[in-house]
Amino acid sequence: MKPRITVITLGVQDLERAVAFYRDGLGLPTSGIVGQEFENGAVAFFDLEGGLKLAVWPRVSMAADTGIPLGAGGPLEFTLGHNVHSKSEVDAVLQRATRAGATLVKAAGETFYGGYAGYFMDPDGHLWEVVYNPEMLPPN
Image (cartoon, rainbow, N blue to C red):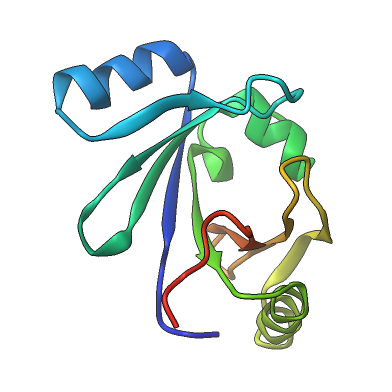
């Protein structure tokens, strides 16, 4: 695994309210809500310095995607995103993480947006998504 975080995803209660807060209130650049055509796919990405992205995604969608029951607090507050260049790299990072003591939450598989992703939880309960997204490749 390379030493980078490419996306920080915050679980939110109200997506439109969150977009208004970050876009209109804080002035963060965004293309607005995307993925509305997919069940549990609506999300907004904000461009941060250094190529980092902040995503806001409804908690209910995060619960559906990870298989973790929706509840107060816990791992569905945010995820750390690690984008990679290929599907095989997703598999390799997930294997390395589980060998190191992580819990595999969701095995890697095809995503609704044409990518490939899986989730692991670190030993302290932090949720990581390892993802190949052909539209959001990390720097070499």
